[in-house]
Amino acid sequence: MILSIEENICDIKKQLPKDVTLIAVSKTRTVEEIQEVYDQGVRDFGENKVQELTDKIDRFDSSVRWHLIGHLQTNKVKYIVGKVHLIHSVDSIKLLKEIEKRYGADNLTANILIQINIGREESKTGIFKEDLPEILEACEICNNIKVKGLMSVIPKGSEEDCKKYFREMQNIWHSIKEKSYKNISMDYLSMGMTHDYKFALEEGSNMIRVGEGIFGKRNYNK
Image 1 (cartoon, rainbow, N blue to C red):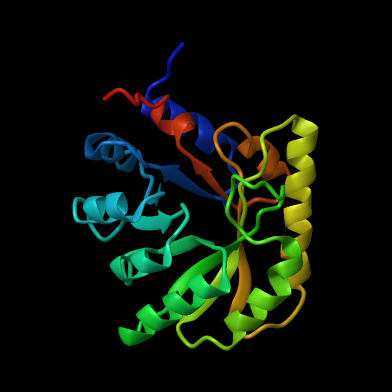
Image 2: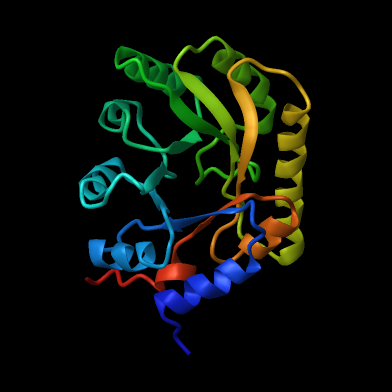
């Protein structure tokens, strides 16, 4: 049985603790579909591509919080300055410096998450966990960046495998949270998507990114 967007959101919200943010992953979705989700009270939307994100921003009012959840190229940073609520996918010092430069030029602050490639997959972006101290050190000397937490996309696998990776992420998140850094706070642990968010919630995620579970399967032939 195919559920409606309204039924999907209702079902997901029933499972969410009150301090968890639901991000509706709206990449490839039409403005009409996004409006339907908006009408159900969702205000956080995630996009993968800068062009698609900037095309959609002007179609909605300022109550929408846009999240850039896909890989961000340094040459695209200039297009999102002051337009996104949170950049989830900071995965290099080079990108960090470009964000600092572009936001600094407009005297604005970028809220970011550091993306960790916890499964060490070649097909995914994100830093390896052993490189975290270096990027945290670089964040501390920034003037226009605030680190708000961590993000990860884990490998597909069994429930046991998923929980193992989520638990590892939570341990890293907690270890940073216990220390005192300049410009760095661990407010968000962004992990869990349509097929694994229930496991992520069990392991401490407080920000999940759900696309298909809200909108239904994508039709790539449109």
